Structures are given as structure tokens and as C-alpha cells.
Length: 155
Image 1 (tube, rainbow, N blue to C red):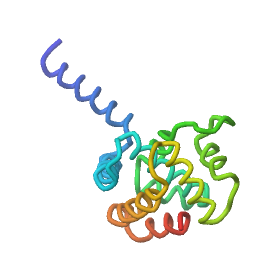
Image 2 (cartoon, rainbow, N blue to C red):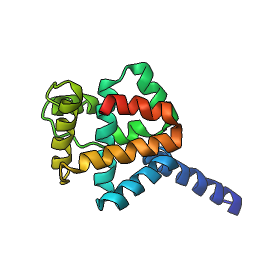
Image 3 (spheres, one colour):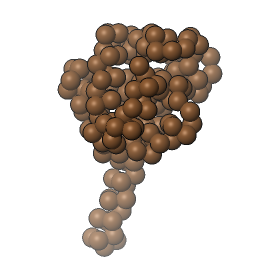
């Protein structure tokens, strides 16, 4: 195998490994921000962000969530990183929904997120910090319209 073929193969492999992660460089930046700001592990930051996005997805119309996920690629990877704490079903969004206990409105959403964060080994007070960071990140990366869609679903 020639040197150029080896380099090409390594580049393809590296690209595939990166794509398998959070889905984009921007999501990696978000995870880094969450880790630094909240002094949590990468797994906690990833699953916590996934739980927040999963909660928003449950409250949004499919069209609105599509706008958000198109503007912030990698959200679905974060949602799928949320461990299955529910003994019912295997769907991540179903798990988030069952963690919310079927509650509606922001109080039910935040309570469900508090339970998820607790199961991840984080203080429930961190939910608000994660939501704030995610909203700021969405605003800077995708603009006010996307941030407002998330904010409406989360708060």
C-alpha cells in the first residue's frame, strides 16, 4: 500500500470516528463548555445535554425540532447518549418522556430533567445551568430563532 493510500485510509477512519461522536465540532464545543462550566465528566455533559435536547424535542412540533436539529447538527447523537434509566421501552425519546412522568409544561419538564440529572450523578440544580448554557450556545451557533424555539420548549 502506498503512503498516500495509507494517509487516505487513516483520514477516512478518523472522519468516521468523529462522525460517530457527538455529530459535529459545534456539539463538541458545547460538551466542552458544559464540562468546564459545571465541572462534570464528558459522559455527564453529553448525557445531560442529550436529556435537555430530548426534553425539548418532546415539547416541540416535528417541524420546529427539525429546524433546531438542522441548525445544530449532532443533537440526535446527544439524545441517544442518554442512558436508559426507564425499565419500559427502548426509545430514548420515550425514556425521556417516561422520566417526565407524563407531566406537561415547564415544571414537569424541569422535574423530569432533575431526575435524569440525579441518575447521572449530578445535582438537580445543574439543570438550569445546562439549559442556560445550551440556550446561549444555540443563540451563538444558530441564531435567535433557533434559541427561541428551544427556550419555548424548555422554559
